[in-house]
Image (cartoon, rainbow, N blue to C red; front, side, top):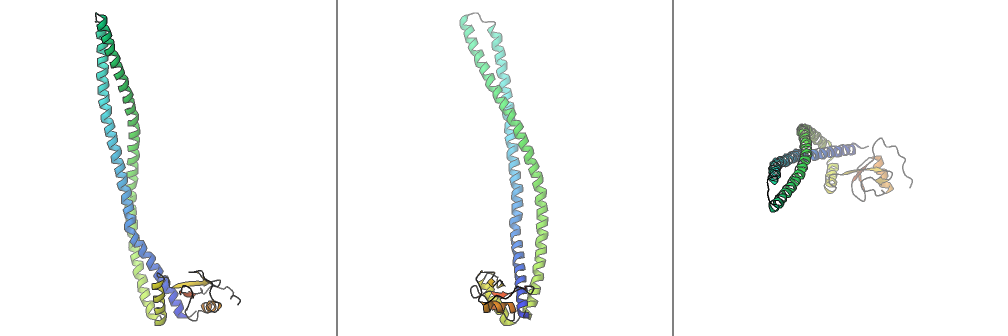
Length: 243
């Protein structure tokens, strides 16, 4: 393979690596933000759970007070029933007793509901606390890992850019100009492997003469369809296609 073509292949590898690393670095803020969002969400869930638990506790205590008061009235009405002297007073007191009994029943049902809810809310708070306890160290670990990764990527980018700059000085100016022109038109992908008589980038069948030129690697040749510079890896041993 002609040296200029080998240099172009290496140049494409360097450009691809630089682009990938830059995407990784650019994605770092979003990845860190996702961790922070996870922590913030866990904090919100825990705060809401604790607030519901507090409201339940307040409602339960109020219900217990109301129930105690209703039970006291019921007991007093029953004592007073023994002291009535007329049928009218007797029926009136029975009416008060029935009302108090209904109030006690309703309050007991309500208290039972609050007690059941209390257990559910306590379990939810405990689960939310566990989620937050896991989210915080995970976010810290991710922040440290991603920051270290970004630092490593920046170092690798600088190293690749230095090698690229050196390689450019060794490239034939015409080959470099062709590479640059095609890369600008093809979103950075100036080269494409030719395999089994096809361009692997656009999947169009190559003219036999073009494919043979690509196999020889004596000079840069381009795909007639996508204009990418074609190459066949040196280790490729496929047989030449028949005309």
